[in-house]
Image 1 (cartoon, rainbow, N blue to C red):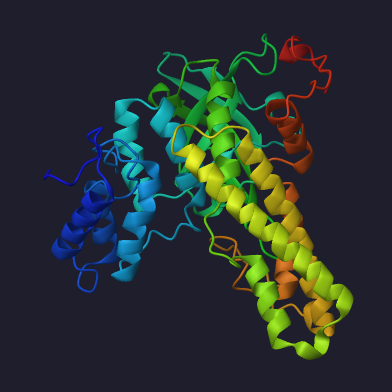
Image 2: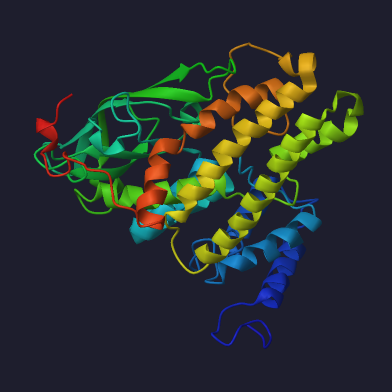
Length: 405
């Protein structure tokens, strides 16, 4: 490490990261290197998540400097890891494995997760435990020799389960304890016997969601994250990162759905009315406020783990997506009612800006449900951000087995 590459605290600075990125590009030219080989080399060079530890895709650098690396690689035409396809792994599984995983788990899971060789999904919600996730009923029982667990239950609304190799899973290991306790967090191999994935067709006609049935699935104890019975604590890390991943994506000004709506306005002067103009202006301002708030949130993240503020960002994202997509359909009149294909498909991800207005309008309806319902997130913001009195909860100290169901 040469002079000028580090800050006073001994951490890499922007110039140091640019130099390391140039070295990666020289050793692995994007034009002649297979995309997967390039991504593996990038991870090994510590340029995947620069704020992660050395040897785990990072360089212990400030989190804010990831943008420096990304800009250099984008300018050089380097391949990315298709973050839409592996968003659950990147945004939810990786920070949880980093914080609670053993050294062996970190080395096993993080590299193929980041390169996209292994897709992840999230086995949290259940038919009887959606908004009240802590009421989950999927059971994990110690196997006969004590080296693993046997899991039985059903999960629902599982995005990407049809293409996932691994899943982050929470299951009840002690029904004698209150619902927030007695839960343990696991990594589940989706290719193991007893795992059955069934498509859930949505209002868009697609089946990006799934329901997953777990019947006698054996999970080794080596795939447990955190201590037995501490799964709710581990899950909070996942959920807080999930809400940031959904609602706090980095966008340029007029990026995302508001950009699509503004472009439609510019291209169709004959469709304009005063009322639609006023509403579009309000949506534009709200989108810009949300974007700048997201920038502030990412600066806070550079100093530690995400907090409840991410719930506010996810709330804003859901509200804006539904309002903007509704405005667009109304603005486009008959054209807004068109839809390209109702054939059952199982996509790799959600594309809010690359499809037609009808898709955006229908798909946005799920934004106030997935990743935590807006009603639950309002409670989180009220209690943990604003400090308002919590709602009365009479079941917090009742054993899960005694709860009415």
